Amino acid sequence: MPPAFLPVALEHATRLLNHGPTVLVTSAHDGRRNVMAAAWSMPVEFTPPRIAVVIDKHTFTRRLVTAAGGFGICVPGAALADLVYAVGSESGAEGDKFARHGIVAAEGPVLGLPMIEHGCAAWLECRLIREPHVEQAYDTCFGEVVAAAADPRVFTGGKWQFRQDNGGLLALHHLGAGRFVTTGPEVVAKGAA
Amino acid sequence: MPPAFLPVALEHATRLLNHGPTVLVTSAHDGRRNVMAAAWSMPVEFTPPRIAVVIDKHTFTRRLVTAAGGFGICVPGAALADLVYAVGSESGAEGDKFARHGIVAAEGPVLGLPMIEHGCAAWLECRLIREPHVEQAYDTCFGEVVAAAADPRVFTGGKWQFRQDNGGLLALHHLGAGRFVTTGPEVVAKGAA
Image (cartoon, rainbow over all chains, first blue to last red):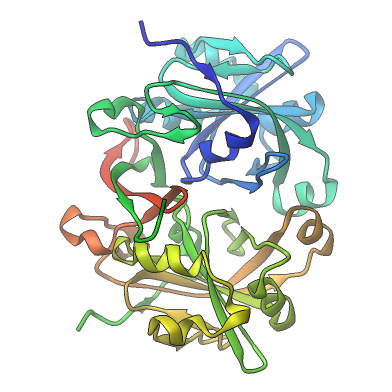
């Protein structure tokens, strides 16, 4: 059994995305739910913790996110590469991807959105900040993080602790067309604390 | 001598940021120029190629970008970790960081902005798309890529070709406080081309 996820303090929440990983976007509304892959996300503010993620306006996820007023961001471990590519290539309008792929989801503590822990390194539950113009023009959705949690084997004390001997939980960075790179060695800059 | 940068077709430009690297943002206006580090950027659209980057409204870079109507995004190689951290910790209002650090800049072909090639893997020259509300509310600046180029040792034929024996040009992903991780091994998802 992997250890249980532990809460991440909101002031550390943006660090979960700071390194630019490919993520899974989860959503649920009115008895339907979905999960898609997104390579395009970033933090935008530390306090309050806010992020932006690109969700195409033609996707089923976008419909659920808009209706529910929130979304989940799950940071998949490298062992989930096949799953990330699969859920990024299918539409959830045609069937529940959680059921199809046997994905178990926990319930987010604030908004009740589906949060994936098994195989993931962390998740962030986000309230959608409505910005109709940028949602329309750039498919860019802003969200405020209302809860976050992580696997203590890779994120503890507010910091990532990537280790090559914990390869299944390293980050995925999408190069395109199903090609990813994972997390490599750490480099500490001169003068850094 | 490293090989000269080669132009990247605009339809491939977003791939230069798809993996979520930490970047350098360059700017110039009216005889002043600057370079800062930014961990928070992402593509938002393939065609036309558009990106978003977070540039704090209190920075000298933001002033130059707004005045010039454009910015450069340079993707530093791992060998530049110390420089990335240094230019991310200083203000360009107090002196020219290019001169202080001996950074040589080429001139962007469309907007004439400073583009860093030596030690970098790629650059994108971007025209600012004015969005005053999101610039103010989220420090998020949208830009359209008008030119791009890359070092053919790591990006060729529209694709990244990261190799561990080319370590100085691997990407940097900022974990926070001067700690970075570099590019690790490639993983190809099942079913990918």
